[in-house]
Amino acid sequence: MPHGFNGVVPYLTIRGGKGSEAAAFYIRAFGAEEVRRMPAQDGKRLMHCQMKINGEDLFFSDDFPEYTGSEAPPPAGVTIHLEVDDANAWWERATAAGCEVKMPLDDQFWGDRYGQLRDPFGHSWSIASPTPKEG
Image (tube, rainbow, N blue to C red):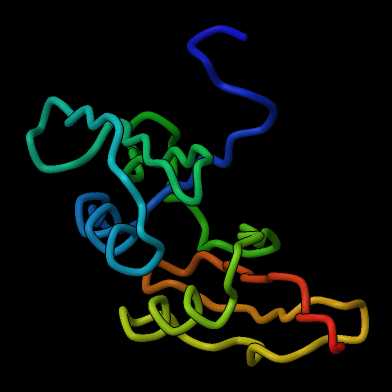
């Protein structure tokens, strides 16, 4: 694979010139590690940011309506899923950082501890880990 990337990499658009805020937030909320940051020529926005969350890549940039002809719509219809070792710990960190609960974390009928959140930039996230087996 070119550049060492595998499979599908989510690429988010951050509205309102808040790309740098999003980078700091993802570090606090999801334990992200910043890999690369490319500022835009205006010195205010991010042209590109690459982060690792739970060992996987996430890309994002600020919105650039001057190139696309219109502002990006509010995020909708996509959820970024985090399959983690301890859903409770990841959930606690994300909600403490400021994620809004969309679906409370709970044991689900399909065998996962699962819940959904929304970050301050409008993007939806789900967090899950297998429900511990009794026994």
